[in-house]
Image 1 (cartoon, helix red, strand yellow):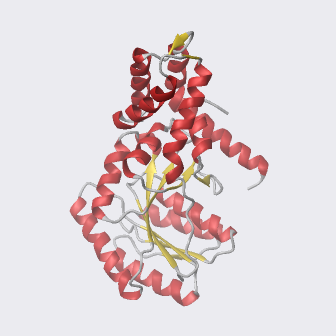
Image 2 (image 1 turned 135 degrees about the vertical axis):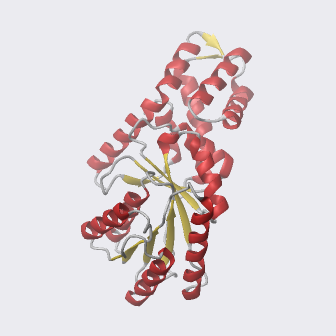
Image 3 (image 1 turned 90 degrees about the vertical axis):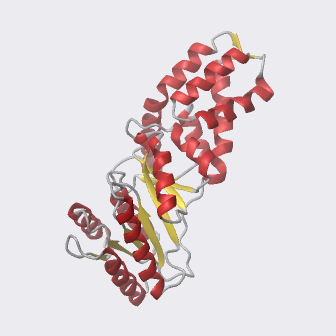
Length: 310
C-alpha cells in the first residue's frame, strides 16, 4: 500500500472512530478541565467508558490502572487521553496479531464465519486480493449456499483478483462444496483456501450441524483442516458482538477475529472489551468496501484514534 493510500486509510479509521468516541472525548474535555483525578472523577470516567462500549469489566480495569499512578493529581484532558491510550494499547497489544498462512500447509484452509451482514463475504475477497498480491496462490469457496447473493459476490471477487472460486447452485450441500474446493485447491497446489459459510443464527441447531458436517468432510482429506476459523464482526453492533463471539465459540473453535465497518458510525470501544474478555487474536480491521481497505490491526494506532489523538 502506498504512503498516500495508507494515510487515507488511517484517515477513514480515525473519522469512523471519532464518531464513535466523540461522546467519550467530549466527556473527557468537560470532566478534566482544571480538575484532579479524584475518586468522583474516576467514577464519571468509568461511566464514560461504559457508554463508549468498553463494557463494565474493561472500563473498571482501565480506571483502576489509572488510579494507581494518577489518583488525586491535577490532570488535563490531553494528559488523560494520553494515559487512556496507553492503558488501552496495553490491553490490545497481546491480541494484535496479523494473520499469517502457514507455508507448510498446502493449502492453508480457513473457515470464515459470521452473521449475515457482517461483511464476511467482502472480507474474504479482500483477503484473497491481499495474499494474491503477496505472491500466494489463493482460491475461494462459496459455501454459504443459503444466500445466492453471497455466491455471486464471491464470484465477482474471483474475477477481480484472478482467484478460482468453487460455487454451486443455491441450496447445494455446503459440506460437499467445501470438500470439492479442498480437493481442487490441493490438486492446484494452492497456498490458501478461504471458505465462506452460512451466517444465519435464527436456527443455531441447523447451522451447527452444517458446520460440523463441513469439519468432518474437510478432515477426511486433511486431518488438520481447517487450520483457522476467523470470525468476522460488524463493529457497529457494539456490545452485541459479545453474544456473537459466544455463539460462534459454541458452534466451532474460533481462532481469530476480523472487525469490519470501522469507517462508519463505529463503536470502537467494543474491540477493547472483546480483547479483554476473550483474548482472541484480532487479525485485521476494515474501513470500507474497497479491495485495499482491510489492514492488519495495530494496537497503538487504534488506541490513540479511539480517544481522539493523532
